Length: 202
Figure 1 (cartoon, rainbow, N blue to C red):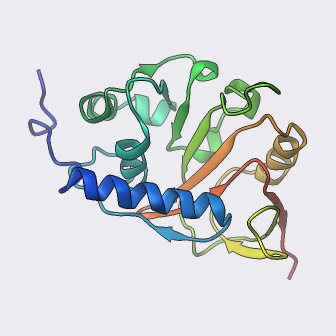
Figure 2 (spheres, rainbow, N blue to C red; figure 1 turned 90 degrees about the vertical axis):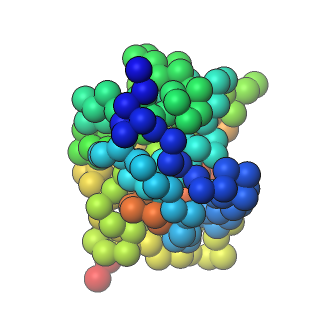
């Protein structure tokens, strides 16, 4: 039983679009805080954003367990779409997830609810794909760390009230910790575990 208008859609050209999206995600990780535009996807079930869907089509596979927050899990179409297009298992244990997709930032679980990796295998951690209201308007943050020349400014409506404290604690866990991919529509910003974020005054 397929439905969601009998599926397909997704990337128009799977290979070219996936390669382009992969380069975009890698550019975002290499330049934390920079806003990158991701290739569009069609036929995405609400409340999943098109940028998050493109990341899923590019990075998810049968070996990457995915956890969905309550808002996304409430839509059966989202899990069906992910499974149909990527074969990734959608699981109920956030601590066992390779990726977590969050549509309700204010209810983002504490980071220690996810896989943080180990000192020997820090890459065995969860990457959180966090859908946010805006990556161009909202509070201003100063970002610093590897990949940033001095500091860079990000203005974003992230929607996680204690995001600064969470990221500070996350950085203290290095080399363990989670990586964040912020998504708004078709725009993405990466906040790797090495990135420091503070509120910009004025």
